[in-house]
Amino acid sequence: MNNKKDDKIIEGEVVKEDEIVVKKEEDKAIIPSAQNLLLLSEALHQSGMFPNVKNKFGALAIIEYGRELGLQPVIALQTMSVINGRICVESKAMLGMAQKNGIKHEIIEKTREGSTVQFTKSGSEPYTETFTIEDAEKLGFTNKINWKMYPEEMCFWRCIAKGLRAYAPDAILGLYSKEEMLDVGDSFNSKPKKEIIKKKTEPKKEEPATDEQRKEIQNSIAKLVELGQDTDELDTRMKGYIKNNFKVEVKKIPDDLNSPMADKLLKNLKEHIALIEIGDEKKEEDGEQGKLL
Image (cartoon, rainbow, N blue to C red):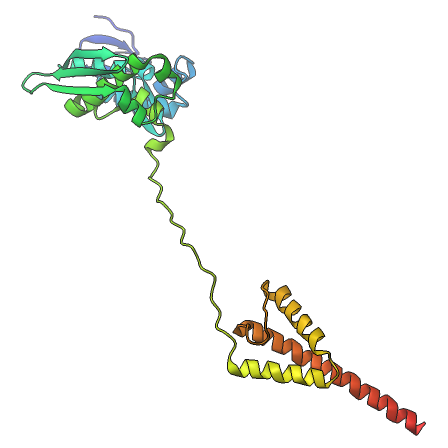
């Protein structure tokens, strides 16, 4: 056979040099060249036929995963998606893959209330799976538009996906269906939130004023009275001072004071005493100067 110079003979067939070489091995498409695979992924992504594929790398991941399942690149891109970081497949394609691997199914029940399906395969006992509208309601799916409009179909395909994962995980590589991932949403990968129990913090109970603090306050009050302060007016001013600084009302000073109140009030009383004494000393100095003059 005469071939062009740039042609190659692969397994008895003439293949052009610029063609991507694809051979079949156990019904799985094998693309040996990573560069060719990336070129294929980019070309299919740019075709615009697969809106579920966001970029060429997502297309590459789907094509490779599909290859493991025995799916050709175009079929993989048509039926598989990446949702919340996970590759998933349409339920119908999932059932097709299972049937290709010798899994048979029999519909026992298929109504708006739920579905029951029996799965069988050579050399294994039959397996029955059920998914009801009550199950969907418990999972919070029934408020979604698809569940409201097509409850029978939604229950059926959820039953199929759930049953195949339990009965034939090797046939679907443990994949979740696209419908399941869309129902579950972001919560599929999210970690359960720990319940934060806020402890009620009781206000710190301050120690009552000590006997020494009470005594110092009484002495300071007596000193102020001696310096000409009115007792009732002084008592009113002290209670107002405590209310402004500690947001509480006290009936009797110093008996009702706690230790911080007593400290702050005592400091204020001593400053008041000092100011009055300084004022008296200045008056005396002014008087002496007047006598000298």
